[in-house]
Image (cartoon, rainbow, N blue to C red; front, top):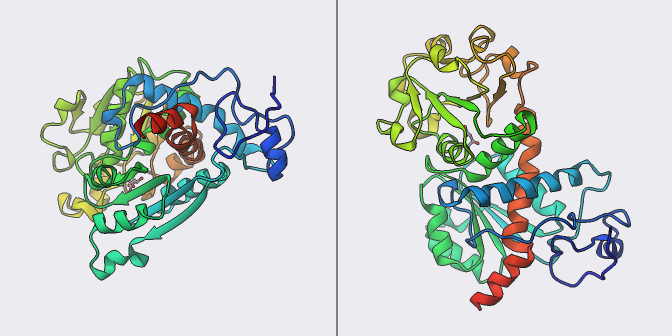
Length: 357
Ligand code: MLT
């Protein structure tokens, strides 16, 4: 039952009605809930999302369940709710990005947060300022959430230690890309019902991929079996310590796979030197229709993007009926809305801040 409580200045918590606030702001249809009333109050344990490695399975499920509820907002004619009204989100992107950056911006805007994006070329870091000084200066403007992408593993951790704002890691070098793994998990759950017991193959440049690392942590925590396939030059030497089974050929790895996730070769992180030619790479590790036939009949195909057609994936597979690649992109908005909400907007997040003060 929608409630009619008048919205306060702060964010709207699960179970609180959006209609009054939305009506005031002219944002959503009267009677709409920002969030279902039966959603349990819960929060993430940290003020930051730095990696999947640091989340437990319940926190991952909380994010996925929250994202599931937020999906519907993007399908409304007016795609905006007042949940994070008055909150500010600053995107600091020190590496190129189309999807992730746009997705964070859209997610924040759909929750009515104020957003500002800063890229490497427009930041004072090109004038020699350190990341910590940049962060301290931005912190002095009282943002609520900082989203950071950086080429150095650990950059988000430095920011999180330096700033009292919540920090979201949008990709730090070859380390982690937690929101990508979460949107992948949501997409798998949408298509397969559950993640537990699935066999998920991740193939390609495992060694240089933060997406692989975050997905391995996420999918294993949710009960999937994860197998990885790559040429030896793209396989971390201690990969088994992550709890995966490793293959140096694609064909045997595909057998019995419920999900096939292909990865881009991370040329910017040293991938270029590791194989003789893209044609050879495609012949051996590219996901073609013939190779995909070795997976389960209902296996789905995923790719985090950007895709190199004819290198890691054939065009007819990328665009084929088993591809859920664009669903991943759509789910990225809902997952980022959920993470922003849980870090900046939930009642529990507010209580954490009050307790810390
Ligand atoms: C990333 O930022 O890691 C992307 O989502 C995947 C890629 O760049 O290949």
